[in-house]
Length: 202
Image 1 (cartoon, rainbow, N blue to C red):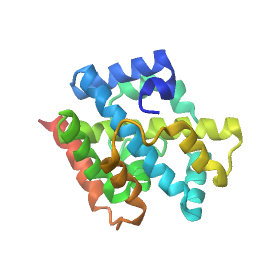
Image 2 (image 1 turned 180 degrees about the horizontal axis):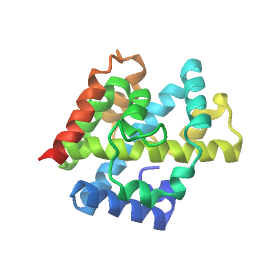
Image 3 (image 1 turned 180 degrees about the vertical axis):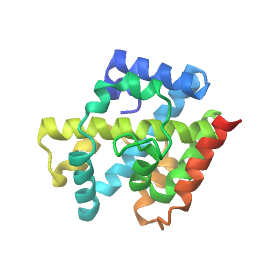
Image 4 (image 1 turned 60 degrees about the vertical axis):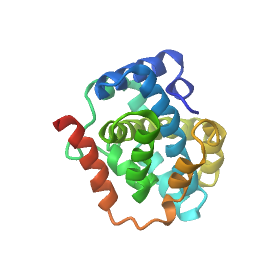
């Protein structure tokens, strides 16, 4: 699952990619390359969490309570509204908070690695991750309900849709899948939010 077309289908994926490109002020090709790195990184972090019983239980609770898939039914409203600030976001759209659970203190390094590999600046890369995280969670929540997957099956669900080893290479996945053991003191999430905000303040 290395593209939004893989995740959402051809028409919806193309629309989402074009809208994200517009929001970021970046060309479509560059954003597409960044998405092909960002999605496996997010999924790698999710898979790592789901491989631990406590992490799987937390993920199962989040998917059951906060991510029912309805975001995908209003994707245009979500994307055209821009990236919501933490104060404006709810649990379904709080990309920064979601990344905190998925990637922990790896969030900012992953954004910087995406920037290094694609030519997006760090703020654009941070906003891309913040935008994609709620979409991925909504997709997985919808799949969980449709397939009646419990906490024990989440890892298989994620891996079965992920293609985690595909285009992005090893180092960014190492950052993502190592997140579970990181010290989640919140500082990296503040960095990520600052990176994202700085881009739009320039």
